[in-house]
Image (cartoon, rainbow, N blue to C red):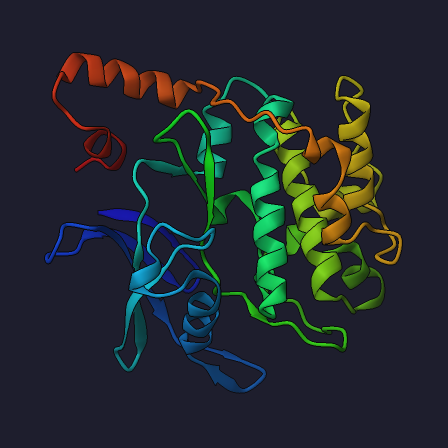
Length: 285
């Protein structure tokens, strides 16, 4: 069944016949940028670098790629599919209002993952709620990174073209037409945190540049300071990944599972259906 679709292809849910491992199958069309045809193997290389292959299933922040096939006009990627899980956007939408601060501290997992990715010279470039999966199989939430289709290798000189979601592009790209990997990742993490803690889950760089973004005064001082450091207009004044990793707001960890409307509905289904497994409930199998 269909999990989602975008400008470059679609994603289907499936099962590996050999051992019934849940997988996602992505069909991605070839695309052309500046006269060059780009094939997905770059995405494959990035995923192998940070998520590993079949032997790494379930052990890394990035999902693992199991196989890929060149079908001439499109490329097929087979990846692990954690269950039960929902993407972070769905989790946020099914929560009552903004996420609580202690739940939003799941961001620490993403900061740690981003540092590891950058250490391996991988720049995701499109960190947003839609590209993150939330595993809800235990009391503690676990976040997994997906969709490296806009990713590239970290480079020393600034980037001058942006491939990703323009709503979360760093302000320096709109101001001076250049941006670097690490400050961009910090910006996108800050934008993501703002969305998690905002009652409307709404943030765009455009709104920020127009002065239409303000911090909720009900947030703790540490949290507001964390957001300010991530969302500094000048990338030179923006905190580094290592600095936000050590920030007091993230160091004081307390991530308890918040029961969202989705979780409540699934619990009700489980009690009604008796023997139905959580995997069947979450995936519709």
